[in-house]
Image (cartoon, rainbow, N blue to C red; front, side, top):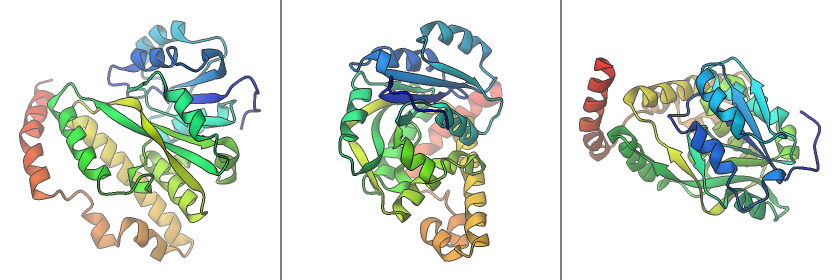
Length: 280
């Protein structure tokens, strides 16, 4: 990883592969923090598919911020490259469609005041301008309500922070696990007995997926990462452990099953979104 700089309290890694139209608001929100901006470093990861957005964002950056060109559609690789280039001891990972609350940096740093905390899982609220986005809010509330705070199933790179020393010790994010890379990393935190702490309040507003295509792409990519993660564990003789986390192969193959009420709630907005996608 890049050498540490005592000039920064926090490095914020922001890949801009799918900003959902919130890219400028995302970067602008880090320019409006209560914590001194000079102590916060932004690490913008440009995958090469957002030339117009990058032209608009670069004037918003401070001289000490970084822009990395990583031409890849693999989100796991974008985060891994960004984290390895960050120069602060504390690294926060978020998404280009997340708008930070003004107290976000200060809140993250305050949780890390406890030396026993290895990582922080940030709470979030939602931005949902479309019917599909509104249903994502509904689904996430149902999903997160099923798990205790900080559970690996509830982890998201919209708001995840880690001590650099811990990140390096655990080998960092594994790009081959794609969008499952954060979940895999937190599973390893749990296995090592390291503490993951929540924030006291929401620190980002998440711009939800606006179309069914966005939802399908995300779930498919996460599924691809799970397949590789499960394969790796089985090859190392840990098939039972993989089953404990993801369920047996039969259960895992039905991971997309929905409760009847959830399926009914999704049906109409899904049809409308599919129609819009088809016309567009």
